[in-house]
Length: 603
Image (cartoon, rainbow, N blue to C red; front, side, top):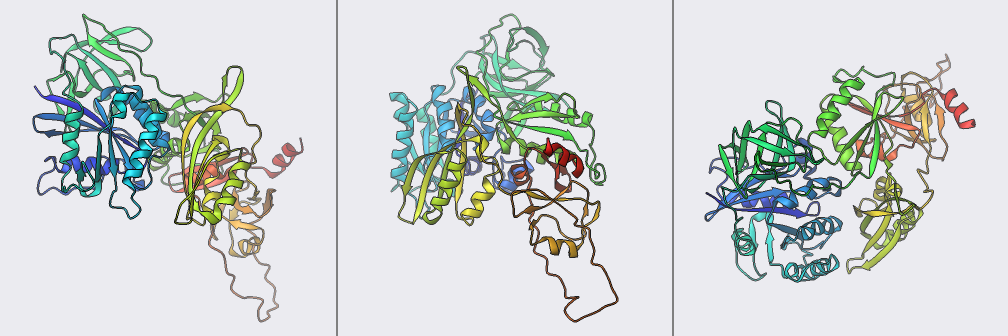
């Protein structure tokens, strides 16, 4: 029977978690000598590969000496924090990665807090020590201060420190030590925690901490066997979160070996297993011996902070995209129910009186990743502006706040401070560094940050870095200034013409080019002023018999501004929608008819 240790790799986004897991797998014989090794092998989802971020927690396993070490690679972005919260109960220790130059970031605080709450003793891995601006000793002190702030116990404060370069597979116990392998980190793991103890004759106990889905065998439960053994074909009891108890038969049982799932007949205490057999199993349910029901404490997931309306596309172009496959509310419902199978941070409600659903999640990125996956799968829909979800605490209306960290050249700091204070943010920390950069920390309402990223990029000329992480619910701060520019809205159906767009360029920034099909109510540009303007992008030049030199010069059109899905969602106002199809992202007014919009505004 294996000696088992489970570890999680946690960090802020882009600190090198997936790269470290690559090094652990590669140096412990998971890949064959002739096998092509893909970078960030655990980031298997298309969007994860494209953006270089981890979205879903994933398991793998290595063998070191006579130990089996299960490794969980976790997301680093705050929007996917529900993935991190659950797995803390299934591991013996966490490797906390901190960038040797950046130091602890907002998400570092979140993941460390969750680890300390589970009484885990983290291992600190100072990564990227080869950076020009690396300051490893200072970062260790900053991380120690963070442990103190989070009320770590004396035992947790005595954390081991490993320095390294994950990209090169190097770890060392001191900065001047010579090392070419990751082995010092593995030795530290074995020193930090002993193999999981138990007895295979104990009655089975396993809590579901994650879910997966297989199109052949259905919903899969994933969790750590905390007592006894689990067998393929075994009939077990299931104690649900609501206290009810049912039974089912384990139809398939898998464990991790390297990066592959391997089918097993039996798995023992300490191991992380994946099993099938119960089509409606949920996070927090406990699988027990049928004659000895012993439920574990339920897993609580933090509630969503943001919602959007996912609506059936009602524009004149609905269904005209040849790559669209799914258009109806039934299609939307089926897809969202499928997402709920595995995405536990999501909530879906019916929208009364409309063809659509209110979808709530942990942030803009959480919801926009779902939308991006849907459009790639062939779904077509309209989406409303993100809205924050309020709470009542002690009789007061409260809203979500975020910790915002900004690093930018000093010359732009005044503009950034002014912008964020307009959006009701409170400036908490200002630090100037020797490179003429300034480090700013704010506490800002999520409401005020919606739509701010593009203004931030413009105001810092692309040189600033802004990092956000959910902080807490705080009292409602009142009205916040929204978008300062109005939009140019098409008042004609037809094909846009270069002549019209050329003449409209003085009025604002175009977001469509010539020869594009447009419809009444579609947003075709950003107005220079704060009001909306109905315009005709399909108007052609009046031809006459008169010709004069200079009157027929070639027109010069400015390249139109294109929106990514996230930028479009941030840009729109409450009376606007983003029309999402597999091949296009359009902006439109909720009410397409200009006369009806005018009557409504008059009221």
